[in-house]
Picture 1 (tube, one colour):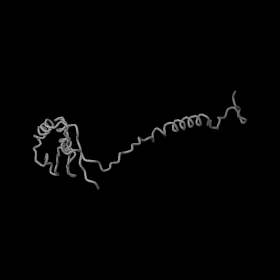
Picture 2 (spheres, one colour; picture 1 turned 90 degrees about the vertical axis):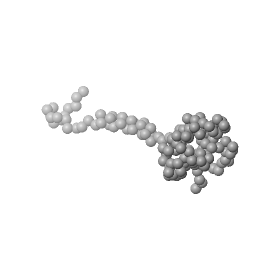
Picture 3 (cartoon, helix red, strand yellow; picture 1 turned 30 degrees about the horizontal axis):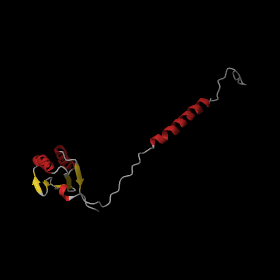
Picture 4 (cartoon, rainbow, N blue to C red; picture 1 turned 90 degrees about the horizontal axis):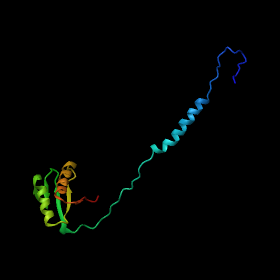
Length: 135
């Protein structure tokens, strides 16, 4: 079925067919409605809050201090970085329940602390604690 223009059959139709445009816009609207909630989702994590806890028993503790200049001390005795792993192993052999408590200065680079932690892990120590001050 063809539409006839009253003026003549030779003239071009000057009306715009908006039906395909509306169809495309509705499809885009549906796609946007479906995907918008997926883009705005966030993982909700409730971080733990800490309170004062009871200290660990003193007989199984090994205090490792790292000063701002990078000097490492075990139980207030300075230790060379090459000797750390050996000292950790010796302590673990004498007390298998050893817990290492790290006292690190605020200005100590994270890499230095990580290096000492890796040496403790290689020695077989699995219990680590980080000592901080209350604000």
